[in-house]
Amino acid sequence: MLKRRDVADSHALFELMVDPAVFPYVRHKASSYDEFAFLTKQTIEAEERGELISRTIVDEWGEPIGTINLFDVHDHSGFLGTWIGKPYFGKGYNQAAKDAFFSELFFQCEIQTVFMRIRKENIRSIKAATKLPYCTLANEIRTDVYQQINKDQEVYDLFQIEKDQYHLHLMRQELEQSQTFSQPYSQPFEAKEA
Image (cartoon, rainbow, N blue to C red; front, side):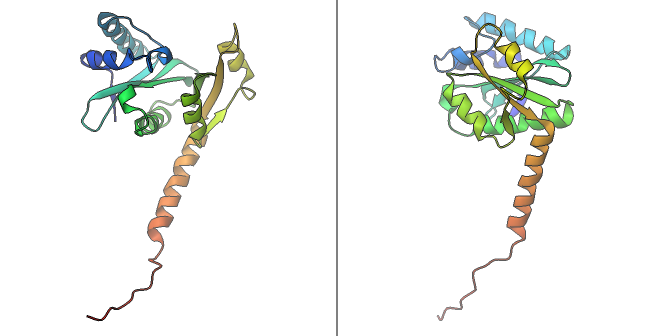
């Protein structure tokens, strides 16, 4: 589902990124393939310096379909940035990628808080964020961060995901699954005559 960024994936990712349904919502835009390949190299180097964490989202066949990133890593927190190519919208890849990425961030990279700034007019992303049971609208909870991302004008809503909330969500899921499998079959067996 996720793999480390690789310049070899640049062509496929660039073709998906330039789609008008995707391009306006990408943080690091590129107007040419060469520029995108250069940005990918810079991203890989920035991760080596600990400034961000970036992964390529792949489909079941290992084909690149988008990226998921934690930008501006500072004090065990950062800002999430995700995009997926239009042909893959609504197929569950976004949620699966977030689950894999959050597990890596919280349990391998010592991240405590993931922020998401979403443009107020980006209804698709706002709906996706509100569906996450471990995600909280943080406009009023984290006014310092909210004001920082909207310093010129109110453009973004701020959401946050805390490691503890995410971990609690995973524990609830495991409990629900164990209860589902431990319940006896409730339908009585009926013998049928031959």
